[in-house]
Length: 155
Image (cartoon, rainbow, N blue to C red; front, side, top):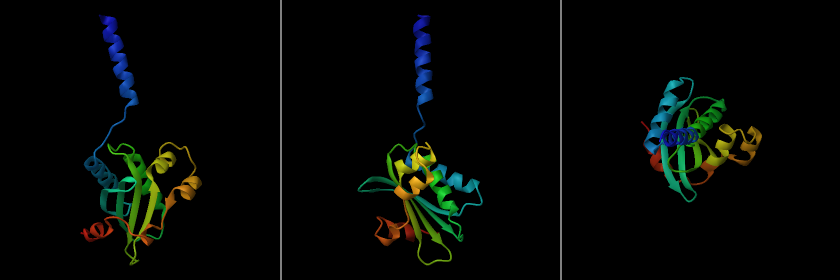
């Protein structure tokens, strides 16, 4: 009887080590807001949005900056990758929309979620590969689903 109990405990422990937390959209939203509030050097967070498009679930982060330095885009994609990998729903894309205080037109950046996770989390690809094959900053040139509703929800 003790052998069965020990085997059961070992099986549960090995399963627990290999499992990862899974978060709902609401929990991911709270985590991202907390992460942005922790670091005062990050641009202001306007919102975190989930929506569906043809390819699947999109996680969109809207920020407001007055910075000319685009290094924060890498930091924001890193945060999206670190948190987004634990989503209950599989996320197909990460989008960052930067509402720069000095420009009239927002700048946007898009990356496939799998590709961003391969770079930022798993270190399977290089930064240059991720930038060349996965990152795009031209999505404001075409229509984005739900853009107008997100933009009007500003404080």
